[in-house]
Image (cartoon, rainbow, N blue to C red; front, side, top):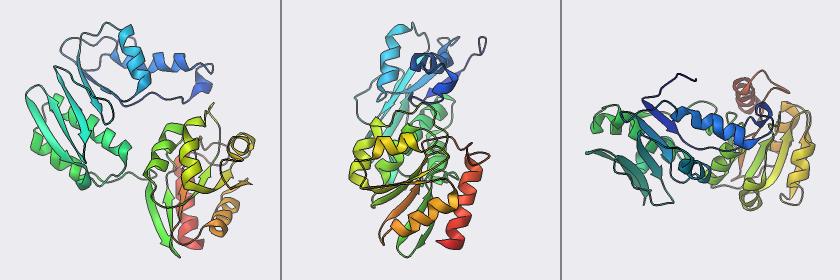
Length: 284
């Protein structure tokens, strides 16, 4: 990484994750993320979120030579090299003199987090010389990825959603933000130094039952008791999903969005998601 030079570097956000690998020091993690900019020259492009406070706090520390391409939905951003801004359901991404307008209602990937991803992808593609028409069509054709807000089935009026790839708090934040139904939320696994405070407002208003699935649920139980009307601790997938089935009412969503790694009960998040889908299809 010390000699690596990115021609186009993208930093979508910086939130606490993998802190167990960084001596539980967030700044160490931030510094590692910002390394994507080292060795960039005036011929290169740095694409980043203008809504991410951590990134904004880091920018004055660096003497950047590359072209900066911020994207945002909340904060006004502008750059002489280009930018993207989401407003009223669409965004225009501009790099130099080339622009593309995207109607987010036509995207197959839903939610604000995916609008951010689409803005970053559009800027990167334009910076690489892809035509606006090709960028637009590619974004409209892009299919949702497995294990990321993946609808599995609707049984008895209850929608079951596999978001097993959400292994950190930030991913769960955007998952909960996108929920339009009352939620039975499945969380838990191997904690990575999580701070659950950013989730509590969404959880308080959207979640009526939290089912903790892991070998050690003490932290989740402690953090959300009093925030969620019902908190249930389980230690296996079958026990967790049986509890979800009992708690869910017609019109609800059961959301597997763990905020944790999977290694206490599963090989990886993919296995966790596959077993979740198999259980739902067979037993829900």
